[in-house]
Image (cartoon, rainbow, N blue to C red; front, side):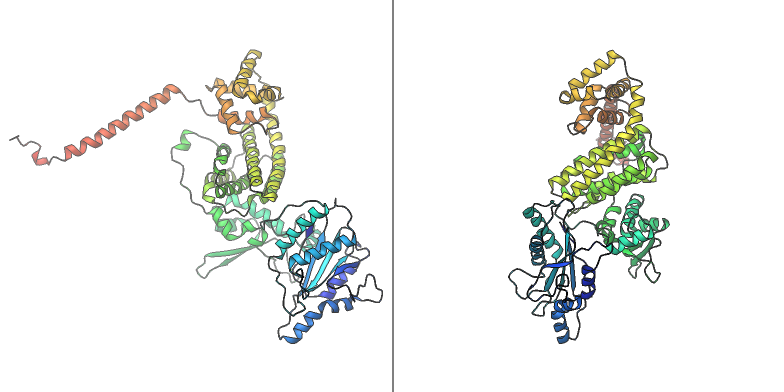
Length: 570
């Protein structure tokens, strides 16, 4: 059940005309009052042919007129409107049941507190089977204004209890992190102009798509302007950026002027302070020789970064930062993905946006490695090869599972659901990307003898999942991957154990596919040479000892003054 409190209105008679009228699509049938603040003497134009809308409006507005006549400053924002709608699959509710629901909502909101005979005047009008409209005038009988601060949260809590009491569809409790819902006017405007999205939703998608490309807030706004989006920055006299608003091209008001939306109203995490915290984190650079020792692509770097994501989930502020950065990586991957995967990944990124924010403050510095990998992908000019792309998608699937589980543990119902929905699209994209990789590998399947030996390695390394792996249709391809790794000097048994430790296989729908991408990614580097490693350690120790010796001896020599070096001993 959804109760959507509307912005304060000014025209009681006008709203009544809508409630008792035919509706925009002739959907209003048998409009009538099911309950109200005082049913005795209440004129109901839906039941009494002699009652008029003007009479009913005057009846509801009486406390407003009395207050306005006593005070110089008139109240105009006095119309409180709250539609209450049941879910499509809910049972048909009677007028008596709707009356009880309306009473509980006005009590929770503060319009008519329980046991308070001096509350506001209100009515509940029903003109359809699945919903009612509550209309109130926000001046109490004693002339005071009602206390409505936080009414949306209280009404939401009341709706959750009503769902339980009446056996209706159970919705998830809100946490005040959801984006602003488009108004009816915005939805009708989008429909009229032939837009698939309202301006707010369209701008949200464009801003999120720009985040991986920017290193700070100024770069982000410049990127958006270059993309054709109208930007109105708010600056201090010093020129420092204080805030911003964005406008969709072609979205004008009745005077032909551009309509702007403040970043924080587009989505809570797109306000300037939140964007700055994500974009302008400082991180120590990787050791200059690290990337030369392990040459890799941005796609491999992103997979490596995701491999360590689970390590940052023990601290809540770090976990929230990693989940936020994960959404940015999904977005960047969607932008640079091959054409056949782009649409599915774009949907995954849009869906996961709800999972990126919660009431937990993110320590964004903790996710600098993942965010740096995201920007590398956003700025790369080359697409991924098939195996690298499949490995990254498999890593994104596992990271999203981790994110969903963390949200579930924290009772973040909306975020967990968003992560699960995004996971569905990521699974679809990952399966599609792996098809040509598996076909190519299966065509090079090792001999029967080699396959039996590798199967033995599987049973020894992951005995609990061996039967599922060996009966997976992708087993021949996995055998090829293991054989290739063994030819490169790796030990299949060790690779299997490491892969199973990195990504548990219980939740894997097809464990052989998971192992293919994991082991391909791990074994792409040459296997370590024990002799070379021992020689390197010996050389390092020897050089350290030499340096230490030199560091001790040199001061001893320099301690003797030059003029005493050749002085005969007395």
